[in-house]
Length: 432
Image (cartoon, rainbow, N blue to C red; front, side, top):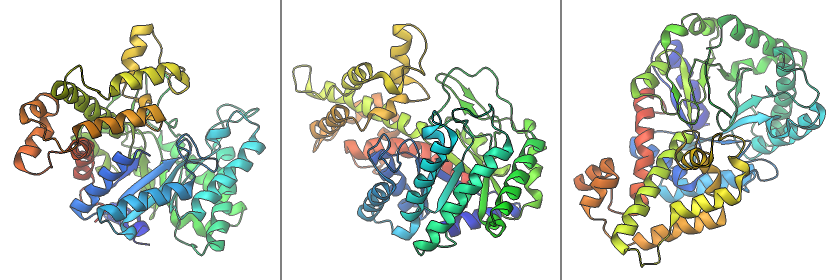
Protein backbone atom coordinates (compact mmCIF):
# COMPACT_ATOMS: atom_id res chain seq x y z
CA UNK A 1 0.00 0.00 0.00
CA UNK A 2 2.99 2.29 -0.50
CA UNK A 3 1.25 3.78 -3.53
CA UNK A 4 -1.91 4.84 -1.75
CA UNK A 5 0.14 6.05 1.20
CA UNK A 6 1.62 8.61 -1.17
CA UNK A 7 -1.89 9.90 -1.90
CA UNK A 8 -2.74 9.95 1.80
CA UNK A 9 0.47 11.84 2.58
CA UNK A 10 -0.26 14.44 -0.10
CA UNK A 11 -3.73 14.99 1.35
CA UNK A 12 -2.42 15.42 4.87
CA UNK A 13 0.32 17.81 3.77
CA UNK A 14 -2.33 19.86 1.98
CA UNK A 15 -4.45 19.93 5.13
CA UNK A 16 -1.42 21.20 7.04
CA UNK A 17 -1.21 24.04 4.49
CA UNK A 18 1.94 22.60 2.96
CA UNK A 19 2.18 22.79 -0.80
CA UNK A 20 2.31 19.21 -2.01
CA UNK A 21 0.90 17.43 -5.01
CA UNK A 22 1.31 14.43 -7.24
CA UNK A 23 1.55 14.11 -11.01
CA UNK A 24 -0.88 11.74 -12.68
CA UNK A 25 0.56 10.39 -15.94
CA UNK A 26 -2.28 9.53 -18.30
CA UNK A 27 -0.74 7.71 -21.25
CA UNK A 28 -0.52 4.23 -22.70
CA UNK A 29 2.56 4.81 -24.88
CA UNK A 30 5.47 2.62 -23.79
CA UNK A 31 8.07 5.38 -24.21
CA UNK A 32 6.00 7.82 -22.13
CA UNK A 33 5.52 5.17 -19.45
CA UNK A 34 9.24 4.33 -19.47
CA UNK A 35 10.19 8.01 -19.30
CA UNK A 36 7.84 8.47 -16.33
CA UNK A 37 9.31 5.46 -14.55
CA UNK A 38 12.89 6.57 -15.21
CA UNK A 39 11.92 9.98 -13.84
CA UNK A 40 10.66 8.33 -10.64
CA UNK A 41 13.86 6.27 -10.38
CA UNK A 42 15.94 9.43 -10.73
CA UNK A 43 14.16 11.45 -8.05
CA UNK A 44 13.25 8.63 -5.66
CA UNK A 45 9.50 9.10 -6.04
CA UNK A 46 6.44 6.95 -6.59
CA UNK A 47 4.99 7.13 -10.09
CA UNK A 48 1.24 7.43 -10.60
CA UNK A 49 0.21 6.08 -14.00
CA UNK A 50 -3.43 6.08 -15.04
CA UNK A 51 -5.23 4.33 -17.86
CA UNK A 52 -8.41 5.89 -19.18
CA UNK A 53 -11.54 3.97 -20.09
CA UNK A 54 -10.88 4.95 -23.72
CA UNK A 55 -7.46 3.32 -23.70
CA UNK A 56 -8.09 0.27 -21.55
CA UNK A 57 -11.35 -1.54 -20.79
CA UNK A 58 -12.74 -5.06 -20.42
CA UNK A 59 -12.78 -5.38 -24.21
CA UNK A 60 -9.31 -3.94 -24.81
CA UNK A 61 -10.04 -0.25 -25.52
CA UNK A 62 -8.21 1.43 -28.38
CA UNK A 63 -4.86 0.02 -27.17
CA UNK A 64 -6.04 -3.59 -27.23
CA UNK A 65 -5.23 -3.90 -23.51
CA UNK A 66 -7.48 -4.98 -20.67
CA UNK A 67 -6.67 -3.66 -17.17
CA UNK A 68 -4.57 -6.70 -16.23
CA UNK A 69 -2.63 -6.36 -19.49
CA UNK A 70 -1.89 -2.70 -18.79
CA UNK A 71 -0.81 -3.53 -15.23
CA UNK A 72 1.56 -6.24 -16.45
CA UNK A 73 3.01 -3.96 -19.09
CA UNK A 74 3.69 -1.12 -16.67
CA UNK A 75 5.18 -3.41 -14.03
CA UNK A 76 7.42 -5.07 -16.62
CA UNK A 77 8.78 -1.69 -17.68
CA UNK A 78 9.26 -0.74 -14.01
CA UNK A 79 11.20 -3.94 -13.33
CA UNK A 80 13.41 -3.37 -16.37
CA UNK A 81 14.12 0.19 -15.21
CA UNK A 82 14.83 -0.78 -11.61
CA UNK A 83 11.74 0.76 -9.99
CA UNK A 84 10.24 -1.50 -7.29
CA UNK A 85 6.61 -2.47 -7.90
CA UNK A 86 5.57 -0.89 -4.60
CA UNK A 87 6.60 2.50 -6.03
CA UNK A 88 4.11 2.14 -8.89
CA UNK A 89 0.57 3.39 -8.24
CA UNK A 90 -1.97 2.49 -10.90
CA UNK A 91 -5.14 4.48 -11.48
CA UNK A 92 -8.23 4.16 -13.63
CA UNK A 93 -9.52 7.40 -15.13
CA UNK A 94 -13.08 8.17 -16.32
CA UNK A 95 -14.35 4.77 -15.18
CA UNK A 96 -18.06 4.82 -15.81
CA UNK A 97 -20.51 5.22 -18.64
CA UNK A 98 -18.45 7.31 -21.08
CA UNK A 99 -17.60 4.45 -23.44
CA UNK A 100 -21.27 3.48 -23.75
CA UNK A 101 -23.02 6.84 -23.41
CA UNK A 102 -24.88 6.27 -26.68
CA UNK A 103 -26.66 3.29 -25.10
CA UNK A 104 -29.58 3.40 -22.65
CA UNK A 105 -28.45 4.12 -19.10
CA UNK A 106 -29.09 0.66 -17.69
CA UNK A 107 -27.15 -1.00 -20.48
CA UNK A 108 -24.27 1.46 -20.09
CA UNK A 109 -24.20 1.01 -16.31
CA UNK A 110 -24.10 -2.78 -16.61
CA UNK A 111 -20.97 -2.48 -18.76
CA UNK A 112 -19.52 0.16 -16.44
CA UNK A 113 -19.88 -2.25 -13.52
CA UNK A 114 -17.80 -4.84 -15.38
CA UNK A 115 -15.28 -2.11 -16.20
CA UNK A 116 -14.87 -1.16 -12.53
CA UNK A 117 -14.67 -4.79 -11.52
CA UNK A 118 -11.88 -5.49 -14.01
CA UNK A 119 -9.81 -2.49 -12.87
CA UNK A 120 -10.12 -3.21 -9.15
CA UNK A 121 -9.45 -6.94 -9.57
CA UNK A 122 -6.29 -6.07 -11.54
CA UNK A 123 -4.95 -4.09 -8.57
CA UNK A 124 -5.63 -0.52 -9.68
CA UNK A 125 -5.88 1.50 -6.47
CA UNK A 126 -6.85 5.02 -7.59
CA UNK A 127 -10.35 4.76 -9.03
CA UNK A 128 -12.16 7.65 -10.71
CA UNK A 129 -15.92 7.04 -10.51
CA UNK A 130 -17.18 9.00 -13.50
CA UNK A 131 -20.88 8.82 -14.37
CA UNK A 132 -21.14 12.42 -15.50
CA UNK A 133 -22.00 11.66 -19.13
CA UNK A 134 -25.66 11.48 -20.17
CA UNK A 135 -26.70 8.21 -21.77
CA UNK A 136 -29.40 7.68 -24.39
CA UNK A 137 -32.70 8.93 -23.02
CA UNK A 138 -31.11 10.80 -20.08
CA UNK A 139 -31.85 14.43 -19.22
CA UNK A 140 -29.04 16.76 -20.30
CA UNK A 141 -27.16 17.80 -18.33
CA UNK A 142 -27.42 15.12 -15.67
CA UNK A 143 -28.28 16.25 -12.17
CA UNK A 144 -25.75 15.77 -9.38
CA UNK A 145 -28.17 13.32 -7.80
CA UNK A 146 -28.24 11.02 -10.85
CA UNK A 147 -24.46 11.16 -11.22
CA UNK A 148 -23.98 10.40 -7.52
CA UNK A 149 -26.52 7.56 -7.53
CA UNK A 150 -24.67 5.89 -10.40
CA UNK A 151 -21.30 6.52 -8.77
CA UNK A 152 -22.57 4.84 -5.60
CA UNK A 153 -23.61 1.83 -7.64
CA UNK A 154 -20.11 1.55 -9.09
CA UNK A 155 -18.56 2.12 -5.67
CA UNK A 156 -20.49 -0.87 -4.35
CA UNK A 157 -19.09 -3.02 -7.17
CA UNK A 158 -15.57 -1.78 -6.48
CA UNK A 159 -15.79 -2.52 -2.76
CA UNK A 160 -17.26 -5.98 -3.34
CA UNK A 161 -14.56 -6.81 -5.89
CA UNK A 162 -11.83 -5.61 -3.54
CA UNK A 163 -13.11 -7.85 -0.75
CA UNK A 164 -13.27 -10.87 -3.01
CA UNK A 165 -9.75 -10.21 -4.33
CA UNK A 166 -8.20 -9.67 -0.90
CA UNK A 167 -7.59 -5.98 -1.69
CA UNK A 168 -10.05 -4.45 0.75
CA UNK A 169 -9.32 -0.91 1.91
CA UNK A 170 -6.59 -0.22 -0.64
CA UNK A 171 -8.68 1.84 -3.04
CA UNK A 172 -8.77 5.62 -3.08
CA UNK A 173 -11.67 7.13 -5.01
CA UNK A 174 -12.18 10.27 -7.07
CA UNK A 175 -15.61 11.80 -7.63
CA UNK A 176 -17.02 14.90 -9.31
CA UNK A 177 -19.66 15.99 -11.78
CA UNK A 178 -17.92 18.81 -13.67
CA UNK A 179 -15.50 16.51 -15.43
CA UNK A 180 -13.72 17.44 -18.68
CA UNK A 181 -14.31 15.20 -21.69
CA UNK A 182 -11.82 12.30 -21.87
CA UNK A 183 -9.27 12.94 -24.58
CA UNK A 184 -9.74 16.72 -24.67
CA UNK A 185 -12.19 19.26 -25.99
CA UNK A 186 -14.04 18.46 -29.21
CA UNK A 187 -13.98 22.00 -30.54
CA UNK A 188 -12.50 25.44 -30.04
CA UNK A 189 -13.33 26.79 -26.57
CA UNK A 190 -14.57 30.38 -26.32
CA UNK A 191 -15.19 30.72 -22.58
CA UNK A 192 -14.45 28.61 -19.54
CA UNK A 193 -15.95 29.21 -16.11
CA UNK A 194 -14.49 27.69 -12.94
CA UNK A 195 -16.79 25.51 -10.85
CA UNK A 196 -18.68 27.59 -8.32
CA UNK A 197 -18.29 26.94 -4.61
CA UNK A 198 -22.00 26.16 -4.29
CA UNK A 199 -21.86 23.65 -7.14
CA UNK A 200 -18.95 21.86 -5.48
CA UNK A 201 -20.77 21.70 -2.14
CA UNK A 202 -23.85 20.30 -3.87
CA UNK A 203 -21.74 17.63 -5.59
CA UNK A 204 -20.17 16.55 -2.31
CA UNK A 205 -23.50 16.38 -0.49
CA UNK A 206 -25.16 14.46 -3.31
CA UNK A 207 -22.42 11.83 -3.18
CA UNK A 208 -22.53 11.59 0.61
CA UNK A 209 -26.28 11.01 0.46
CA UNK A 210 -25.97 8.46 -2.33
CA UNK A 211 -23.23 6.51 -0.55
CA UNK A 212 -25.31 6.48 2.64
CA UNK A 213 -28.29 5.05 0.75
CA UNK A 214 -26.25 2.03 -0.36
CA UNK A 215 -24.67 1.56 3.07
CA UNK A 216 -21.21 2.84 2.14
CA UNK A 217 -20.84 5.94 4.31
CA UNK A 218 -17.78 4.34 5.89
CA UNK A 219 -15.94 4.64 2.55
CA UNK A 220 -16.07 8.45 2.60
CA UNK A 221 -12.61 8.83 4.25
CA UNK A 222 -11.19 7.04 1.18
CA UNK A 223 -12.77 9.52 -1.22
CA UNK A 224 -9.47 11.29 -1.84
CA UNK A 225 -10.27 13.84 -4.51
CA UNK A 226 -13.08 15.69 -6.22
CA UNK A 227 -12.75 16.85 -9.81
CA UNK A 228 -13.73 20.48 -10.26
CA UNK A 229 -12.92 22.98 -12.99
CA UNK A 230 -10.44 25.70 -11.94
CA UNK A 231 -10.69 27.36 -15.35
CA UNK A 232 -7.91 25.28 -16.89
CA UNK A 233 -8.25 23.67 -20.31
CA UNK A 234 -6.83 23.56 -23.81
CA UNK A 235 -8.24 23.07 -27.26
CA UNK A 236 -6.51 22.47 -30.58
CA UNK A 237 -4.59 25.75 -30.72
CA UNK A 238 -5.18 27.58 -27.42
CA UNK A 239 -4.52 27.13 -23.71
CA UNK A 240 -6.69 28.56 -20.92
CA UNK A 241 -4.20 29.55 -18.24
CA UNK A 242 -5.03 29.30 -14.54
CA UNK A 243 -6.16 32.53 -12.86
CA UNK A 244 -6.22 32.08 -9.06
CA UNK A 245 -8.34 35.20 -8.61
CA UNK A 246 -11.29 33.27 -10.10
CA UNK A 247 -11.20 30.38 -7.57
CA UNK A 248 -10.99 32.11 -4.18
CA UNK A 249 -14.38 30.88 -2.87
CA UNK A 250 -14.04 27.43 -4.46
CA UNK A 251 -10.71 26.83 -2.71
CA UNK A 252 -12.40 27.15 0.70
CA UNK A 253 -14.98 24.40 0.10
CA UNK A 254 -12.72 21.56 1.26
CA UNK A 255 -11.61 23.24 4.49
CA UNK A 256 -14.03 21.03 6.44
CA UNK A 257 -13.13 17.83 4.56
CA UNK A 258 -10.11 16.25 6.29
CA UNK A 259 -9.44 13.68 3.56
CA UNK A 260 -10.30 15.50 0.36
CA UNK A 261 -8.28 17.53 -2.15
CA UNK A 262 -9.05 18.77 -5.64
CA UNK A 263 -8.03 16.87 -8.76
CA UNK A 264 -7.32 18.92 -11.88
CA UNK A 265 -7.74 17.46 -15.35
CA UNK A 266 -6.38 19.06 -18.53
CA UNK A 267 -3.41 20.77 -16.86
CA UNK A 268 -1.40 20.24 -20.05
CA UNK A 269 0.54 23.25 -21.39
CA UNK A 270 0.21 25.37 -18.24
CA UNK A 271 3.32 27.33 -17.26
CA UNK A 272 5.62 26.09 -14.49
CA UNK A 273 4.54 28.89 -12.15
CA UNK A 274 0.84 28.22 -12.73
CA UNK A 275 1.23 24.49 -12.14
CA UNK A 276 2.84 25.32 -8.81
CA UNK A 277 0.03 27.78 -8.05
CA UNK A 278 -2.57 25.08 -8.71
CA UNK A 279 -0.87 22.83 -6.15
CA UNK A 280 -0.70 25.68 -3.65
CA UNK A 281 -4.44 26.23 -4.20
CA UNK A 282 -5.25 22.60 -3.30
CA UNK A 283 -5.36 21.04 -6.78
CA UNK A 284 -3.09 18.36 -5.42
CA UNK A 285 -3.55 15.84 -8.23
CA UNK A 286 -2.35 17.25 -11.55
CA UNK A 287 -3.30 15.08 -14.51
CA UNK A 288 -1.23 15.30 -17.68
CA UNK A 289 -1.60 13.27 -20.86
CA UNK A 290 -1.63 14.90 -24.31
CA UNK A 291 1.33 17.13 -23.39
CA UNK A 292 3.47 14.03 -22.87
CA UNK A 293 2.66 12.47 -26.23
CA UNK A 294 2.86 15.94 -27.82
CA UNK A 295 6.44 16.21 -26.50
CA UNK A 296 7.18 12.66 -27.67
CA UNK A 297 5.90 13.51 -31.15
CA UNK A 298 8.12 16.60 -31.19
CA UNK A 299 11.12 14.41 -30.37
CA UNK A 300 10.29 11.65 -32.85
CA UNK A 301 9.63 14.04 -35.71
CA UNK A 302 12.87 15.88 -34.87
CA UNK A 303 14.75 12.56 -34.89
CA UNK A 304 13.16 11.77 -38.27
CA UNK A 305 14.63 15.04 -39.58
CA UNK A 306 18.02 14.06 -38.14
CA UNK A 307 17.66 10.61 -39.73
CA UNK A 308 17.08 12.20 -43.14
CA UNK A 309 20.10 14.49 -42.72
CA UNK A 310 22.40 11.66 -41.68
CA UNK A 311 21.28 8.95 -44.09
CA UNK A 312 20.29 11.01 -47.11
CA UNK A 313 17.25 10.98 -49.33
CA UNK A 314 18.25 7.78 -51.12
CA UNK A 315 18.37 5.72 -47.91
CA UNK A 316 15.62 3.44 -46.63
CA UNK A 317 14.19 6.02 -44.23
CA UNK A 318 11.46 5.50 -41.66
CA UNK A 319 9.35 8.32 -43.14
CA UNK A 320 7.67 8.49 -39.73
CA UNK A 321 5.86 11.84 -40.17
CA UNK A 322 4.64 10.83 -43.61
CA UNK A 323 3.48 7.40 -42.42
CA UNK A 324 1.56 8.96 -39.52
CA UNK A 325 -0.16 11.34 -41.92
CA UNK A 326 -1.04 8.57 -44.37
CA UNK A 327 -2.55 6.41 -41.63
CA UNK A 328 -4.51 9.28 -40.10
CA UNK A 329 -5.99 10.19 -43.47
CA UNK A 330 -6.85 6.56 -44.21
CA UNK A 331 -8.36 6.04 -40.75
CA UNK A 332 -9.95 9.37 -39.74
CA UNK A 333 -12.20 8.07 -36.94
CA UNK A 334 -10.06 9.47 -34.09
CA UNK A 335 -9.72 13.03 -35.42
CA UNK A 336 -12.38 13.83 -38.02
CA UNK A 337 -15.10 14.94 -35.58
CA UNK A 338 -12.57 17.10 -33.71
CA UNK A 339 -10.65 18.99 -36.37
CA UNK A 340 -12.66 21.58 -38.29
CA UNK A 341 -11.50 23.74 -41.18
CA UNK A 342 -10.36 23.20 -44.73
CA UNK A 343 -7.95 20.48 -45.86
CA UNK A 344 -4.83 22.48 -45.03
CA UNK A 345 -6.08 23.50 -41.58
CA UNK A 346 -6.93 19.88 -40.82
CA UNK A 347 -3.49 18.75 -41.96
CA UNK A 348 -1.79 21.17 -39.56
CA UNK A 349 -4.05 20.10 -36.72
CA UNK A 350 -3.46 16.40 -37.36
CA UNK A 351 0.25 16.95 -36.91
CA UNK A 352 0.57 19.75 -34.38
CA UNK A 353 -2.69 20.20 -32.42
CA UNK A 354 -2.45 20.64 -28.64
CA UNK A 355 -5.26 18.10 -28.31
CA UNK A 356 -2.87 15.65 -30.02
CA UNK A 357 -5.35 13.28 -31.61
CA UNK A 358 -2.25 11.82 -33.24
CA UNK A 359 -1.59 9.94 -29.99
CA UNK A 360 -4.39 7.50 -30.82
CA UNK A 361 -2.39 6.30 -33.82
CA UNK A 362 0.86 5.23 -32.14
CA UNK A 363 -0.47 1.65 -31.58
CA UNK A 364 -1.25 1.29 -35.31
CA UNK A 365 0.94 -1.40 -36.89
CA UNK A 366 2.21 0.82 -39.70
CA UNK A 367 2.98 3.73 -37.39
CA UNK A 368 4.67 1.50 -34.81
CA UNK A 369 6.77 -0.15 -37.54
CA UNK A 370 7.90 3.28 -38.77
CA UNK A 371 8.79 4.33 -35.21
CA UNK A 372 10.86 1.19 -34.72
CA UNK A 373 12.55 1.68 -38.09
CA UNK A 374 13.52 5.20 -37.05
CA UNK A 375 15.21 3.88 -33.94
CA UNK A 376 16.85 1.04 -35.89
CA UNK A 377 18.26 3.49 -38.44
CA UNK A 378 19.75 5.60 -35.66
CA UNK A 379 20.85 2.69 -33.44
CA UNK A 380 24.54 2.60 -32.60
CA UNK A 381 25.04 5.99 -34.21
CA UNK A 382 26.08 9.03 -32.21
CA UNK A 383 24.03 11.96 -33.39
CA UNK A 384 26.32 14.88 -34.22
CA UNK A 385 25.92 17.58 -31.60
CA UNK A 386 25.24 20.34 -34.15
CA UNK A 387 22.22 18.37 -35.39
CA UNK A 388 20.96 17.91 -31.83
CA UNK A 389 21.40 21.63 -31.24
CA UNK A 390 19.38 22.35 -34.37
CA UNK A 391 16.45 20.01 -33.71
CA UNK A 392 16.43 19.27 -29.93
CA UNK A 393 18.37 22.05 -28.17
CA UNK A 394 17.52 21.06 -24.58
CA UNK A 395 18.63 17.49 -25.23
CA UNK A 396 21.78 18.82 -26.94
CA UNK A 397 22.77 20.48 -23.67
CA UNK A 398 22.11 17.36 -21.59
CA UNK A 399 23.98 15.10 -24.01
CA UNK A 400 26.86 17.56 -24.03
CA UNK A 401 26.97 17.48 -20.21
CA UNK A 402 26.77 13.68 -20.12
CA UNK A 403 23.36 13.71 -18.39
CA UNK A 404 21.64 11.88 -21.27
CA UNK A 405 23.19 9.19 -23.50
CA UNK A 406 23.63 10.08 -27.15
CA UNK A 407 21.01 7.51 -28.09
CA UNK A 408 17.80 8.17 -30.02
CA UNK A 409 15.45 6.41 -27.56
CA UNK A 410 17.05 8.06 -24.53
CA UNK A 411 16.84 11.44 -26.24
CA UNK A 412 13.14 10.97 -27.08
CA UNK A 413 12.33 9.99 -23.50
CA UNK A 414 14.28 12.93 -22.14
CA UNK A 415 12.06 15.25 -24.19
CA UNK A 416 9.07 13.70 -22.40
CA UNK A 417 10.86 14.22 -19.11
CA UNK A 418 11.13 17.95 -19.91
CA UNK A 419 7.39 18.06 -19.22
CA UNK A 420 7.61 15.82 -16.16
CA UNK A 421 10.30 18.06 -14.66
CA UNK A 422 7.83 20.95 -14.65
CA UNK A 423 5.28 18.85 -12.78
CA UNK A 424 7.80 17.54 -10.27
CA UNK A 425 8.88 21.07 -9.45
CA UNK A 426 5.24 22.12 -9.03
CA UNK A 427 4.42 19.18 -6.77
CA UNK A 428 7.53 19.69 -4.66
CA UNK A 429 7.50 17.11 -1.86
CA UNK A 430 4.80 14.91 -3.41
CA UNK A 431 5.59 11.29 -4.11
CA UNK A 432 8.52 11.20 -1.67
